[in-house]
Length: 108
Image (cartoon, rainbow, N blue to C red; front, side, top):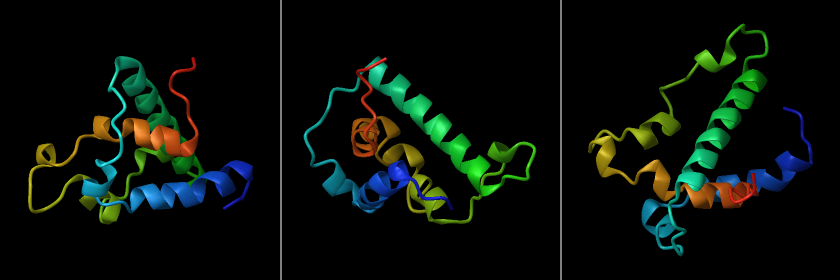
């Protein structure tokens, strides 16, 4: 994994955000969920995932088609003890995630 300024600046914040329990994460002041926010979050997630896949599987023709599913990331989104719609929805964390990584969704 190559380290650059962006990696060094965002990695600790991402780890901290990812480990917050939902109750604590939702205790932060709410940012209004707007179409602009959701479109930016959608784009950020798409490109973040695509870049991560290219980094992880550089020899694959379509690296973004590979999605590991037996791990904590998958289980977090699809918990065994409840339906995924009973879990906080992605829109509830969009502003927090974009803010933590330094993405200003208000700028186009």
